[in-house]
Length: 390
Image (tube, rainbow, N blue to C red; front, side, top):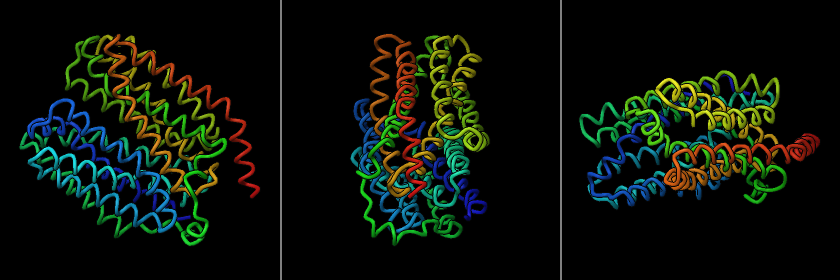
């Protein structure tokens, strides 16, 4: 195992990838509007990226099982850099769409390959810790990226895209120079010809469905909370930025410091159940928001619960699935993307009916995920035991 030397490098790589991704988040709507996009086209511009990730993440995960993690990760990071560069130079709306499609197709390689890399280099006992470290890097990237993008957008709206592109290509060089290949079973896996059907079969299916439900409820919150907080507590964009930053730090702290200890002591299944319950509690508390302090506290409680779920689900999938690590984590990323496609329009529609409905439904969806997981937990135990014997 090379986890001691590789995990810090992987942390830096995923942090830089997500900083680059986060830089454009606060700028893209204004940039697209300047080029001529209307609100519907802007929505499509955001959705097409997630749609490409939904379609292509499983493919890249499977490819990484066959040819190795490092080359696939380099393809993903290079694709992200190219996408940002095209967006920075766009003068027509079709160019933005082309860049988002290219970025979605190629960058969908990054997350499943990073998770598969962690599974390669960690023991089952320490897998949760490794997944948590990747999650923490991702979370911190989303904290710092938008702040950097907001600052540099004051110079010009395409400046953040050039910065994001530069950050991606610097990351690509770091991966090439520092990150060693982790998948030592490429030839064996390629001979087995693992299929997506094998990854999505049996009791392990419940883990993909749990991730879908959690992602759906989270993205519904992200799409509506700004409007909710403005109406309930009169919060402005700057205050909301600080609130999301506090939540991001809290979530990253839990993922980087506590997930490993918790999964090692109690196991992923208990951690997943606890995370879902805390998330559901967070949804309920958000209904009580009335000022900056309550918004920050209640959203952070939600973030702490939600933050432990994805690393723990990722860890458990690599332990229980009969498919290769890349195929399994690629399919997980696909379900995550599906939730992010459905969640925002669903949350917006519920918000138009009543401003508290996205959070009431979020709590209900979370508890549905909890019950589903509880029902299939004994089957997961059987799968794990069978895999160990084999």
